[in-house]
Length: 86
Image (cartoon, rainbow, N blue to C red; front, top):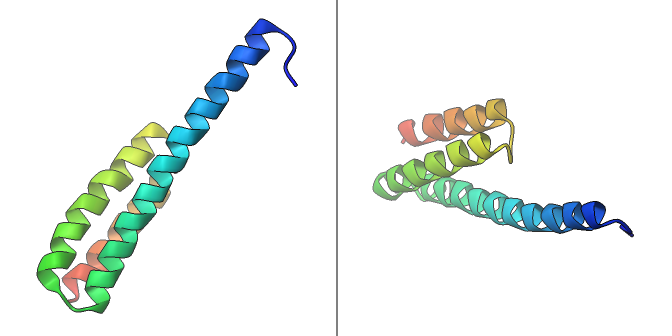
């Protein structure tokens, strides 16, 4: 447990950042699942809309450092390829 004021503050910051990062990561995964569900249902319109939303979220998470940029690019590439295959 932190005993110094600076360490206590860093712990509070860590918890706040962890909560926010967890929210963004969970939301990003939900958007990815929506794209995959639309692709599985062969619904091109819904897949396109879900893809644009997912790309925005992936780029945002990569920019914030929640996920690495190459991982975001890989997800975008694979999802786009799946939607274009419809």
